[in-house]
Length: 185
Image (tube, rainbow, N blue to C red):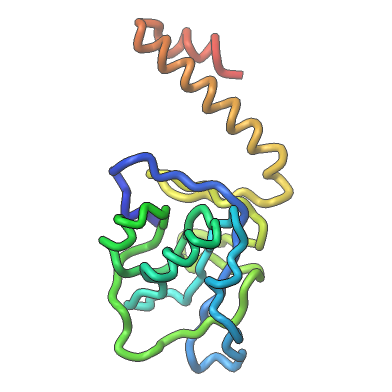
């Protein structure tokens, strides 16, 4: 997945997942009664799971506008999104598999929110649970299970601090090996 700001700027997200599950219209489960975007909690990262190989977008600029208004910190779309320029102008972090257009008629429906969802890929078998932490930057997105987050997040902050100190010393002429020994745990 990538961000429309990829290779451009400091796009970063970190927050607990608010999951959304799309299914084909023919799926027997009922459609979720309200639009999921209206119930996104502040501080959350919206994770949208849709069936694989859907050629059209499932997420657009108005959804990012609403998510930003609720206080969400970003969205991760396991599928396609649209309104690329609107997304860029909004300055709301979004990561997705690709860009697409609106379908000529509905292809999918939301059947559940805040339930475990699968990352729809042949390369990985990953479940994202509500509350798992999603961490994303220009390099991509990773999932940090909720039960590990309390331990891992402080370690990540220490690693970033150590790497920043290393960079300063390397720029001054210190070798990488020497800087690693001095600053990394």
